[in-house]
Length: 112
Image (cartoon, rainbow, N blue to C red):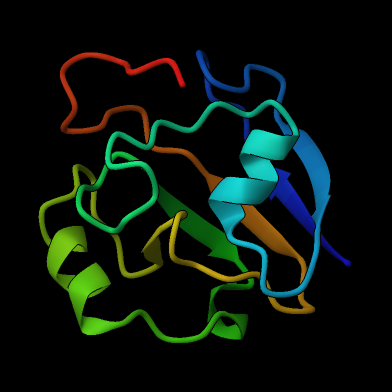
């Protein structure tokens, strides 16, 4: 099991949190299972950018993003070289440090 450390986000995870994730579990599924409510307006189908995260440590341990994910990431607010869509990024065996960006392009929270 890998450890995922979510950095503090003033609304979604104010104190930050470290959780465990199984190999090949998405970052988003691990977060949701641990009550970290990352927005996912397209229901995890890689059709929006609301689940955008920045992998501050451990990025190179993730498999490369597929072309469709890369295309959507180009539209994400605050895009960085270590950006991923959390619905697509599969956790491996390495620990990750994850930042949830302050904003998304979604104007209204879906509150899933």
